[in-house]
Length: 432
Image 1 (spheres, rainbow, N blue to C red):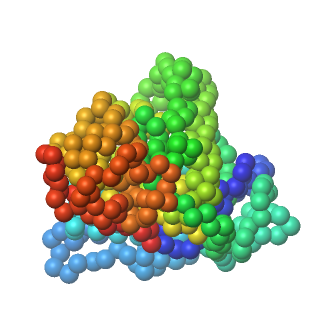
Image 2 (image 1 turned 30 degrees about the vertical axis):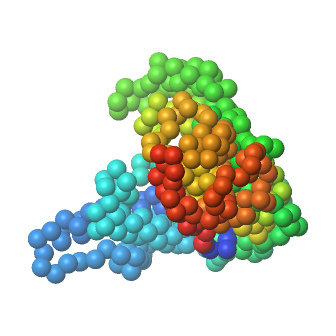
Image 3 (image 1 turned 30 degrees about the horizontal axis):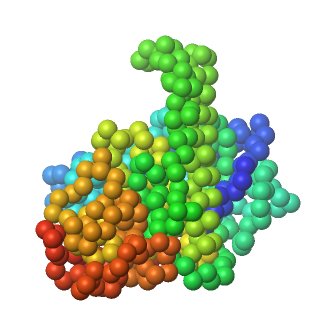
């Protein structure tokens, strides 16, 4: 299992994830620790609900923050030998995670965020539904002789596929839906600058092609990993449907076997998408100094007829991989607001009066007469809006003489012509 390096937004940190070899004795200890942490989480949920109900009619409002919950945890560990038998570090981290989750939900409620976009309040974690996750700070683990030693006398073997760049500050030990255990270390991110190339690139996200760029050599076609696995996935899902247990009854061996096969197939497709995204992002970052990326959020596509194909394209994962790779290699990644990028002309900046339907794949400007593929035109618009020099991109300028009175690329148009509205330049947004 190759390690993964995931840069965290604005923190200068990265995550390196490795597979774990867990013996039977350590497995029993990890499951015991998770049982205690799950009990602490459920107690935090119950206490939060109790305080909320008491504050409805009370004059003096009570609080249920990390300080109060830490005090309750201390009392519980003093009175319960079973809870005291586990390490205190992961239990305290459970309280931190609960407080962060509840604070986000309360913030959304006060800000009157729509319910469909609001973070929900923390809920009870059931044994059959929740996957084990244990968080340890620096004082709760150590690395010795290639093994990971956790608080409480738990020792597991790490499959080191690469060396850690620095001493980790924390580690998350968790089990995925397939049943594999992993250790995710947080380390200080190291920048690895690449040689300058003098080239820039514009990236437009789509469904027919995952990424259309100003360079034909760096276009990312739709890999269709999910479509390739659809037949097998449907077979396993039908097996689960036939063996689904009645409410309140335990699942049969056949149901659990089909469930495990379904989870393995989902995991394989996710890894294929991640591998494709990283390889493409590496090639793009290696060949270009600055990249203008459409800040596209494809969540709304989940409610359209393109939901399945859009999910298979994995646009969000690909965009994240590109941003992380650019930050790792000190490249200039500029996020561009996607509004009207399919309506503006990359050459003269004029905007069409009506949005183009998805069936129309060719963009024709009625002001300057430029004809180009729709996605290519949008990719060039990214460069103009990001303030990059279009002359440094491949095939940015359309063929043919310049229209008299036409502005230079990169300068906002003041007035549209030929039935087009005036162009608008949206300032670029740099990732923090």
